[in-house]
Image 1 (cartoon, rainbow, N blue to C red):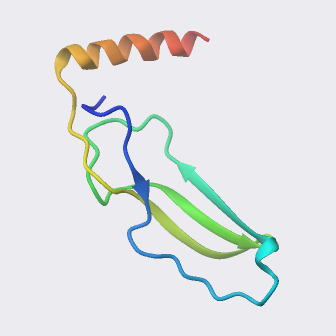
Image 2: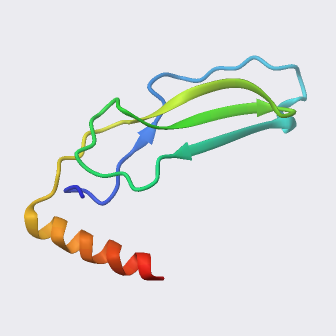
Image 3: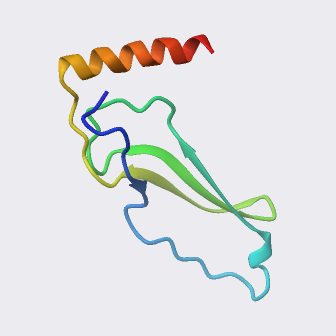
Length: 91
């Protein structure tokens, strides 16, 4: 429950791969993000993974990190978020 409704996630460093020519069609990237991220969120902290595969073989796996910090929201905002999450859980 943060001051912001969104947080930017990404890689801490560039991801570079060297692959055989014309094999790019066999590349698949999978991004996994931890469900229910809650503030405070610290820049650089891991919140998921990025996995790149070719023909079901893992070529590289990197942590997905917060690219910015998000501070915890105030009391009323947190209360409102709890109410929304409660009703969202009903459906």
